[in-house]
Image 1 (tube, rainbow, N blue to C red):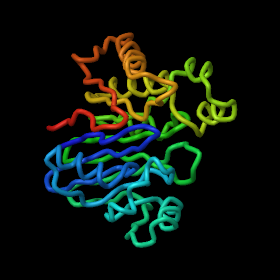
Image 2 (cartoon, helix red, strand yellow):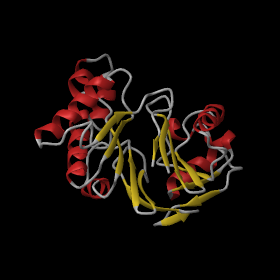
Image 3 (cartoon, rainbow, N blue to C red):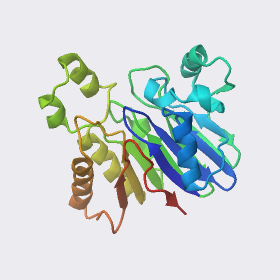
Image 4 (spheres, rainbow, N blue to C red):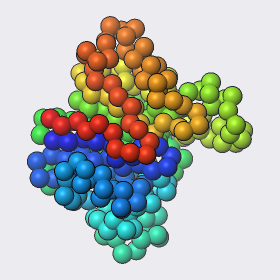
Length: 251
């Protein structure tokens, strides 16, 4: 089993999930060359398909050249076909399986139709991937709390964003209910998940301008500590790097 971010952030996103002989990506927002280089470095020869969370370019820009089967919600599938009509796209309408991995999709609140998160069932081990969401819904929280391993957005420090150089309309979009998740909101999800048994948590999709890895990690670790959960002892807490692969979780 392997779980590893290949890239994470507004410059591009991709997550590798592997179990037994099945390997898939969640999103392909980086070049096929970068994907293949990262796979080679991780000892993975190929992937079976790409599951797409939503249609924004930092999640789909590498699909066309990568030329793998794609799974996407109906509106996202339509958007992908517009730019890459040669791809074989399977529309997600409910739970499905890819090889030896069972997949439960769920809706996320983002400013594009059909935005999804995924809960993966790798035998008895569950992995939740949930980025690009403006607020935490009951659906998001329920799926996050079922995971053994959680990859959750921690996009911005709210004070940094409000004081930063972004124009007002962009700040409003990010802070809005269909924008991106703050460190504080992400820490709340991390705490809820840890209290329900999650033992591996990775903070993802950090803003280059409105966040820092140490701030995001400290915010989550402090929230956990307030409830007696120690990062490094009770939970493995990490931050996905932006332009390179993170540390692989191999079990």
